[in-house]
Image (tube, rainbow, N blue to C red; front, side):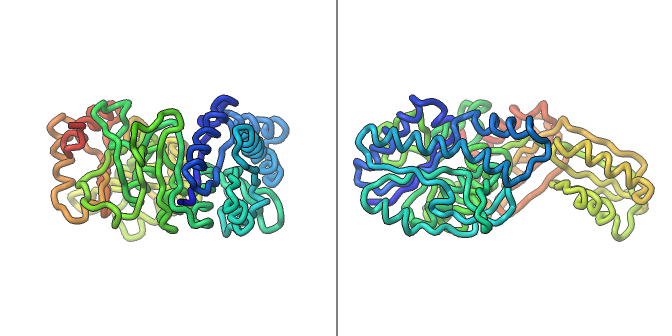
Length: 411
């Protein structure tokens, strides 16, 4: 049959009863004849507690020792799941990142995977033994435990699936798939059967919490088929109950727009009355780059006489105060008249690979928003995405209007 990698997040293994439930799900795949590796996160809340322990001891801890502490959560979960599988008659053993080994670079706390030497693990899987792998961790080239940072367990799972040449990587979480938009806001949102890597990457980067961006990037690079599905809901007779994230070639007919995403983590900064001269953009954004502040959407308006310009751009809300501080510090060089900061904004995006072959996508978006009296403050586009910045108070109205405008409502 197939070789599968299953990944279970913190909520899926949050209690002993949930770990036993995961063991039963793994047993179903083993009973179906599949070779199975399972990647697990720490039990929900455990990693935060471990991080807090470190901070109580030292605010500036040795990053290698930090990794040694926080990686222990996944070690516990992998051992417990292996025991739970053995208790129901399934041969299983736990694997830590250093035992595989999963080799990373030396950037502790946010290490990147360099290679996985999976020969021993595959040999054990071929005998029918389930490999229960601690996610989020590997071993650096100097032999120290290294953690992969935010979304590390998803990244571990996709990388492992690529290394063992798995047919599919199933990401089990607390939602049953990828939806056309947030179903908590738009009740007519529907679950997508398939979505392309590119679309999923855009949705993940724009605030959709289903998959982490790094894991989608890795899946796209190695062409790993990923399925998102729920740990807590049983499939009603469906062979593939969740959402498949696949190459564009696997989707026969592309929808014009696959989803509407939004991000509340946006803040708008406008510099009014900047001198319009060559190099002014570099003068503004250079200091922000030096301060490790990422700028997203940008729009520039030149005055009628061509002597001054207003520059508007967005940063994350967490970076807003630091952005203002950096720009005020450079006021003498930039010579702007006024700085306006606004954190009450939201970025709304329509996403779809079908945009490549259809005109009028942006116009439909602009009209739908205008019909509801929603003013667009900033616009940015890519080949498969159109994003606008609007006042945060209109978030729900905008999502519902756009969902209907692109024919995404459930039949």
